[in-house]
Length: 247
Image 1 (tube, rainbow, N blue to C red):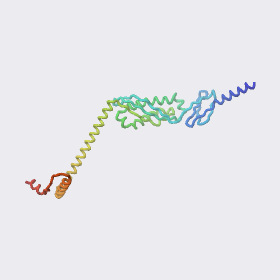
Image 2 (image 1 turned 135 degrees about the vertical axis):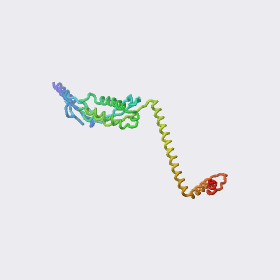
Image 3 (image 1 turned 90 degrees about the horizontal axis):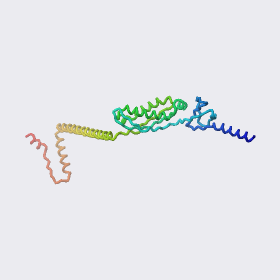
Image 4 (image 1 turned 180 degrees about the vertical axis):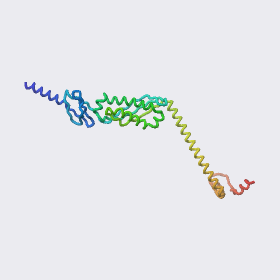
């Protein structure tokens, strides 16, 4: 009789001890008592739920990362591309994350895929490539607005990679090469224009001061004579040349 009573006591103690739960620092427990969700959350640390009466669902409050798989998108200018992204989100209200949506992680991932296709499909290819920060901010804003009723906060969205068709890559490479050639021609033309402008200014100065022409002539002779050659040069006065020019 005593052994039977001892066995009953042990079973009761084991049953009561089964209600002990330990929640980590980043976890919170949502308690359902006979199907009703309690307003207060449990954790972190040691907590107790009534066996066979309470049911606790753990919710992770850390920032979670979801890698959006590659999506086929047709841009606004009818270019077929493949886009993938990464989404960072966090549960800010554990109670709503359990009550308002069946599986908040799955729901957020599906919403991220559809939003990525929708936003990228509304943009032109050049805008996607050059204004990626704006595209990221738009996707993040849409996701955060839709997940707010679930108690989920989307903190960041980053478009990781945009894969273009091979023919589009070749066309963009040709366009970039043509743009570089155009810039080179413009820079060369500006250089020639500035050079001609300086020569014109120098000619005006020499016209006002004829002695500078003689000095320039002598300097040129000195530079030529400094080279290793067998040619002998005899300077001719500028006045002598100008005499034949007048004749």
